[in-house]
Image (cartoon, rainbow, N blue to C red; front, side):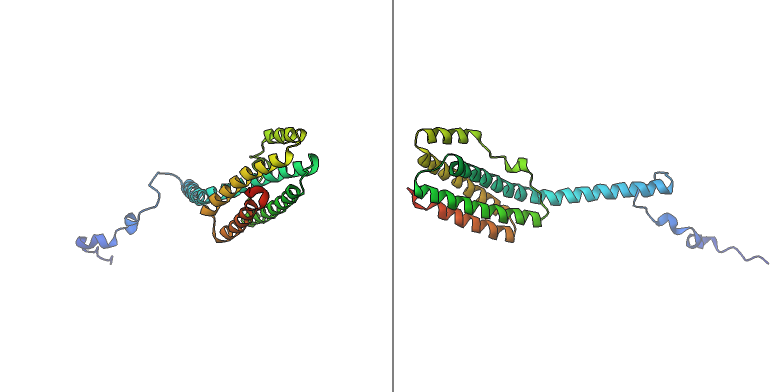
Length: 200
């Protein structure tokens, strides 16, 4: 004896419930492997967008640190030029150049280490962004006119002033560790700018 068919009024209970389940992907009449591949591509696009948003948030901060390094490197380069090739005459200016070189070398080492710990690489082109060959020509002319010391002091006033501005800009977008590092560099630069040759 065959079982009786259930009451037609209750057919809805026995119907396939899969139709109520909605897929994340619209029904594209694609084979299952193609749907999986499409889901992976969509997932990768979403991850790329999120990653670019997160990295974009730190991009300004990173560039500001690189600007500080580039400015510091150029000031160091000119300082080495007047120390080693053109030869400063005034002992006070010579001592100032040595102090500037030491301070900037320390700043550069610490900032480079900070960027390295944060997996940020800086290339030679970025570091040479502020290189100005006309400064070399001006210093050579001043040296020939026995005016190198005052020309270098005038150069330093402008260069260290710009360096301080770059430090302040980087400070605004830096994290706690970066802020501490930049504050220290700013303090030493500010002290340099108050030394007798630069203060006058």
